[in-house]
Image (cartoon, chains in turn green, red):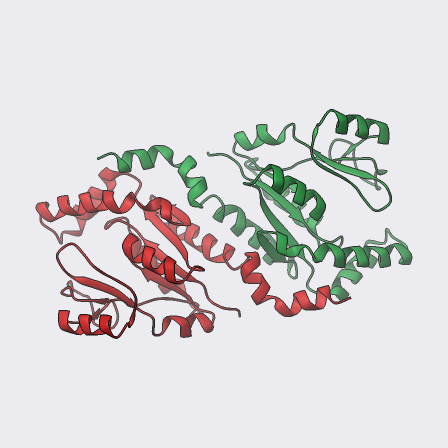
Length: 208
Length: 208
């Protein structure tokens, strides 16, 4: 079975990250993947469920968790809301052989990399700025004003793409999904991974 | 299309490296893969064709090529024969977007890594020593004495597995083949690769 790998998945809003992660989890029949559920102080969007999409907590609760050092990373973002990733559950699931995805932005990614050097990171790009704008408008959630803010934030997020290990362009959804599978599979073939995964085989092959 | 990647593929004799490479090339409808043809001074085995499996040359010819610095790497191996990789053709093919495989041993791999830091390397392992011995006997090419020498050489080759980027265990052939595809695909998604491959997209996304 072997240890699971920890992945950071980041993208500008509208690049399709959430749909890709949803589809990965939906196709994951063997329970070998999960997404770490973040804490946030922002209001739930329509359809979002506490404990499924996020742990929705108050500002006071979030700040109490910061003091308890419960977070692997956290950030106060545009609008004043907090987002954070709790260490609990992540390491348990990795030990069970489950790949754990952290759905966080570049700031969170930087904090995680400092603490967990073995983390792998994937950045999802939209195929063009026009397509990104179209997708944000298509969601129908945001006013024109908010969309412009999201576009600026997207460009700023994208400027950090080169801090990531992998870049996936989400032009055709199925191709982007296949790309992520290639990454997850290849990362279970690296020498660092195989040294742990196939320890007994290597010991047998090298004793002579 | 993008630049091709250069791969070292090494394995102990009998791990199934040649069959895996043959199958990759056979399935490669789009001409996106090739194996670099090495020079050697050893005698052709039954069925081996000059210019296809190897460039078969004499000792004198090989040593003349060494003096001309034609080799990216070369080695004199067990039995006194030379094996070497000529730089010609490799870079041309990489530029055409073709992934080029170097089918060489750990000594050649070390020389290549020193000269081309971007090279990626894959080590193929047999699933057990018993299976390796069975495969060597099954080839029916070698005497018992030669098989024992090959087994010792195999263990010595395997001891260098940790100098490689990836390790593929060739237990089930189809799975090992799929593993190699995952690696080839994932290596075209690394940030280093995408920065070149998707340069225009990144420039467009970041100009605002």
